[in-house]
Image 1 (cartoon, rainbow over the protein chains, first blue to last red):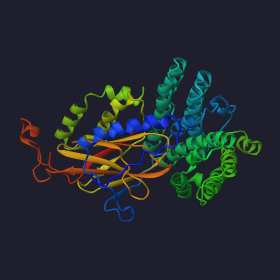
Image 2: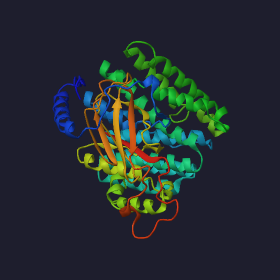
Image 3: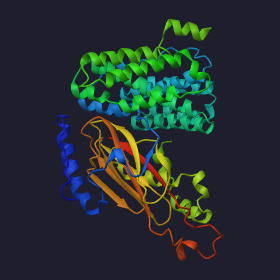
Image 4: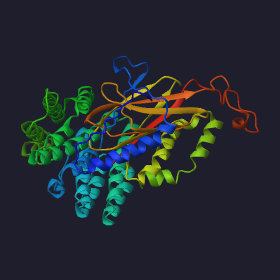
Amino acid sequence: MPGRSYSLVSSHGGKSLSWIVAAMLGFGLARAQEADVPERIDLSNFPGEIVDKVVVPIPAEIFAVLDKLDEPDWNSGIDLPEEKNQGKERAVLALTFGSLVGEGFIAVQAKNADEIQKIGRRVLSLSESLGLAGAVRPHSLSIIETAGERDWEAVRDELDSTQQTVRDTMKKLRDEELSELVSLGGWLRGTNVVTTFIADSFSEDKAELLNQPGLISHFRSLLESMEGPAKNSPRIRAISTGLARLDAIITRSGDLSEGDIAELRDISRSMLEEYYFSNSANDAATAN
Amino acid sequence: MNRFQKTQSFNFAGLVAGASLLLGGAVHAFVNEAISLAFEAATPYVEEGFEVREDTWSGEVEPGKPLLVRHQLFRGNEYWFWAGTSWPGASIEVDIFDSEGNSIGLESFAKGSLAGVRTLPQKTGTYFIRVLAKYEGAEEGLTEAEKGINPPVEGVGEFPGTVDWGLVYGYR
């Protein structure tokens, strides 16, 4: 395909060379059987159908990059809150479920079998509150078992499967909104731990990982279009406000600074304190 | 049990495809064959260290009408996207573009009902995956071999105007 050029420049230190070699090997092989691909398409006037569905990356995707750029102390990132009464608000339970799975991904990165097993049991307990224990139990048992075998890749797969099973089951129950909140909860926990690590050891390469305006916009639209009891929940409104604040920082012109990352960390933490981490005001409200 | 344990034990995908021929697509509501095929395309790459996501995209589309899927990618990860279609005689292609519409695929394949594209994003941000399903036999219906020995039930095997598609991805 004449005229098509590939930029193989990478700024990821020693690993960039192997990527380039791998890319070039793959490039050579691919030429023979490549489909007829346009070099450029007009996104502003696309002659087809735009697919609405948004697949939210799991925290492990961004953790994988952070591991290539640095050696974060993942154990210090685990922060499994004490088990507490989460109330009956299903939107809050769904967010909590997502964040708990996000916690699981952090514990896998830390290769901390004990914490993963605790999280596996907690996932099952929370699924009972959501009325989804039947669907989640096999996954929970598998998380506990594979963590015991220290098969980290299998645990990661199982966490992804768990989240997917819960989301699919919610969709079958026509709870599409709740299903999306599970993704939001996982994304938020992942974003909080990533911003914490980046704020502690800042670099522009790491900060760029937070360039996710499309995802934030998706979550904002989701909360704005919610119906039913969740629409008027003070906690959901607080999360919505938090997303708007995150959005304002990420969509500012220019690269994200160290100060921006610290703000993202603090905002995401305060959002998690609405339903996941301990917050005396919210805990009292739930108890009442 | 993860997806790949499931997929490998799913070698009855051909059987499922055969069943869909007989049932004229009624199976689509229960087993997403296009997604199963896309996961099968992904299976060899798991050995190479790719983590394949459980969440997927799928649907039905008129042949020749391109689809555009938006997705967040992170610089520093390597990605493969795999697409599949289970409609007999249909083919599928997949490619990836940056936010300005420039193709950024480094390697790709398109083998009938399966296709894939690999990329190493140079920036963290939103990217666009284009999926294009084609079907040349819209006027012909099923071949004699596809119809089998028994005459088809009226309407069964007739091209319904759309084909199924599925898209999955993995990263490392």
